[in-house]
Image 1 (cartoon, rainbow, N blue to C red):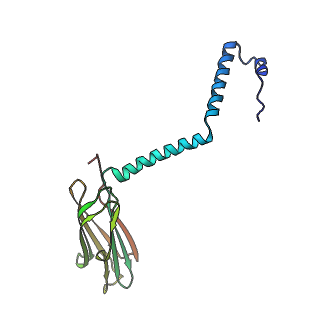
Image 2 (cartoon, rainbow, N blue to C red):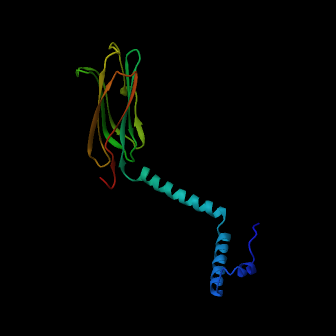
Image 3 (cartoon, rainbow, N blue to C red):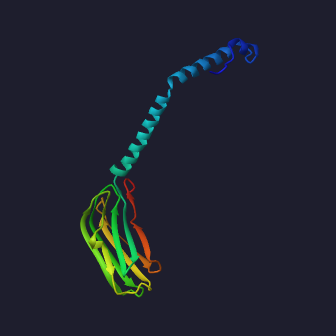
Length: 192
């Protein structure tokens, strides 16, 4: 319990020169005290929870409801008893993509094709990925002491029906393991 000064002690300090100011201060103190009695820790926690749920709803709407296009292609390169390539297409968008085509070529630095892998799929659902044996390649018989080029191309039809293509080339061989993440241009509704 705090030792609050009494009303008489406050009046003796001549802090308030007139009665009107004293009354206004008393009204303000009563108002603050009544607000303090109404605002409990439970109510503060409840209000914070409502605000948190509101922002969660906004994020969920962006992530699941608003049409957006977010496609990326991950490629992992490793040197083992040869050269190992593994790729995975990620559709993090809120709509499915269709007519998906991926081609990964493993070439010498001179541009000579050593091996390739490709896949064509009718549809990749929203918030899903595409990987598997068709996107894995093991190249034997080529030295791990040389540099090589991985040439990646992909194409798909986005949620608006537009045909999108992209690609990237990566030089590999300096490190025994390398990871590449190629992102397609993003498209957001209503900024189409």
